[in-house]
Image 1 (spheres, helix red, strand yellow):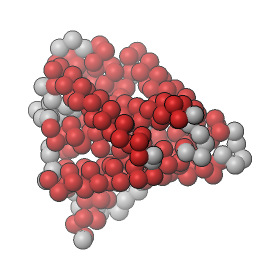
Image 2 (cartoon, rainbow, N blue to C red):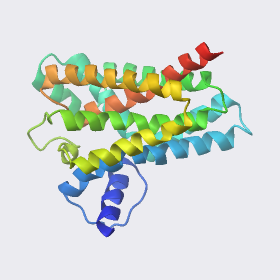
Image 3 (cartoon, rainbow, N blue to C red):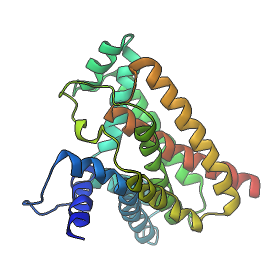
Length: 254
């Protein structure tokens, strides 16, 4: 039980800005196995966003409540996945060879592709949430954050890590965990779908799997595998796709 607590706290430490004990045991193996809790981190991050939105909607316009809930999730993760998405846009937008793409993604500065991509992604996320019935937004945030974090796990378990050097800021999560780790991630990633209309779940799951397959094939053709930035980008893409899909579902149901 203590080892599981250490694995969970390592997931908290790596994927969020939530404080953990300073004497927390750490190793590459523990951090690799912490991917089992990556979708559960989505419960926490999505729960914070849902709580902020639910509380503020009573005293603020829904648009502002949505914006502040988005900022809350970005704050609690330290913009971890948004940073990966921006780096991905810069790397694949400005690089034409594997080495050039990896070099650009490693650069801490954000370029034109990253700026435009990040602004576009955040704007799409905001507009999608704004189009969803306010009574549905809290549960959509919870399910969206957890399910979107399952997609990078699928890439980890079906691909190879691209960087072979020690320069990647996410090197420790570049290895597959055990089969039980994947099973737990699968449970945490899909469990909250019980609160979503079953028909939508049956539509969005294949759609996200298809997106993950196309994304995985694309990055593999360019890099021979994935990087941490690619995983962050996929999480953001899957999250936005989940929201857009629900907007379409909601519109067709009206």
